[in-house]
Length: 349
Image (cartoon, rainbow, N blue to C red; front, side):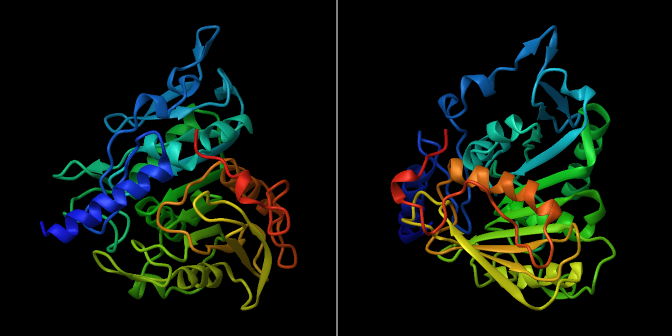
């Protein structure tokens, strides 16, 4: 390896160590998006140990050989029906690392959601990946069908975990964002929404399809200073579209109008001062087909998310169910440009 590459990797690790805290270092270079396991202190004791009430645990093991733990909002919740949040990690990371990175699982459970954070397959260098698109990140061309794997996990969660089949949401970062958007494109009838952070859609023929028969809610979140998966588009293993092109694809698929509406800004990234996240919604989208782009001005590939981010995502999931073309999604209680301050930022637990 070139000495310059080594220095670049070390610099990225230092920056990401500051972003994630507690020594969970994630390297996200184009050829080195590897992740060390999060230390035990990174996941709280209450989340790390299953709660048991009357002999009934608050989680279920799904997935067979590719096991994943479905967290329940309370012991015995399998007897109810509720929403499911699927967390999809970035290249080289893991489900548990990204549950901590998003800092959202505890809040989602408190709102009655089921949460699952599966792991991708390891490549020859031990890096977990999702076979999402040609661009990212099946670099060894493994015969892995991760779309089917996630859909099978969802089916099992419906059958065993009390999941409402009409209330399923994907939240992915980077490689996980690519996969979330691919599932939204190929199987919009299976999910209610897909949220991509620093991911992208597909280029070429896959991006040229016309209107779809089933709308799906889409939220694309992307840092304008992302040097790994670039806001303006670029190429990883293959070309990928820009954040705006990704939004346009789903707006066209959902039958939205050409016009957009801007909403107030949010303060989500602890590494950028002020309300850096600017929200744009497409007008004229059908019920269940909200399409939004949240541009994080000055944010990189690994923002530092805290309580504001988790609340914003969960509020968007809940509020966008009833959003119309003249009513952009309203997010109650989230600091906006007028009342946000850098001192209000919170680091992941």
